[in-house]
Image 1 (cartoon, rainbow, N blue to C red):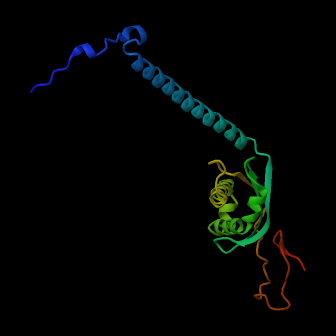
Image 2 (image 1 turned 180 degrees about the horizontal axis):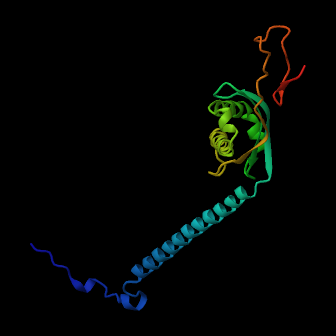
Image 3 (image 1 turned 180 degrees about the vertical axis):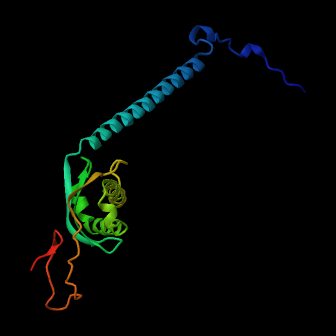
Length: 190
């Protein structure tokens, strides 16, 4: 009981005339190459666009155009002395004054904390002032956060920085009848 197939009923089709052998493979290969090239082109465009926008953003940081004045504050220094300071933030073009105004309280708090760690002797030197300025830039940028992954505050300027000297009283320890007033050139004024 074997079954045999009569080959006379199977039509003899010549595929070579209508269809080239391996044609499907070529079409698939061409399609894969096209998709691969498009992918490479998209990645290259994305990389160049990010690189180009990065340069524009760095240029925006270099072109600072605005300042934000935190106003004059009177604070205690770490050594107990008082300081009167007007801090101005030098902003990048990425910064928004309205966003900064919303953070005025935390910025003032950071200002108080940074100056509270410094001493009057330290602030009398240029390097001491620069160190405080750098600490303020760091703290302010932490509070404000980045815009496009870049800081908003580029620098700090002191519009005014005064460390008032304590008023010396007379030799009787400040009792009535002693000299009073600020000390000017070693003499007291009445």
